[in-house]
Image (cartoon, rainbow, N blue to C red; front, side, top):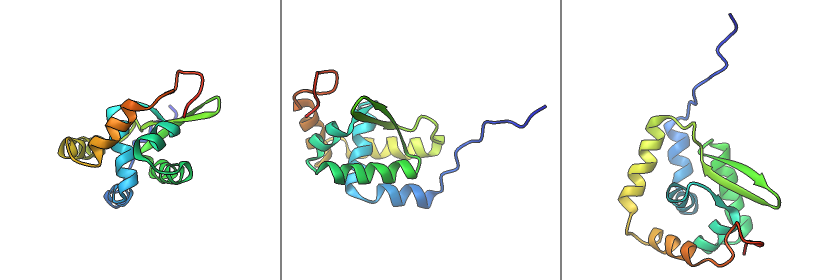
Length: 125
């Protein structure tokens, strides 16, 4: 028989904690946990950072394999990598539980909720 093509992800704790140590990356991850998938423009609007800044941090999260992305037309959508090891998912979920109701995470959610022209509309802000 052939080799098993499924290789479980092996994220080192140092990779995870380094990736989430930056506030912008952590804020992106917390928003993605709350909303299964978000466009770069939604993250930019919610966090209030410039698009190149958000894109750079998302690239870091993608390289760490914490998020995956897909392109749809002009937009790139990000989501928490569904293949994350359980321990990583647990750390992220416990972090989300711990910051629920705490600034700036509450403000990020409120800003996203108020965003006009969210994806699905003809144009993203």
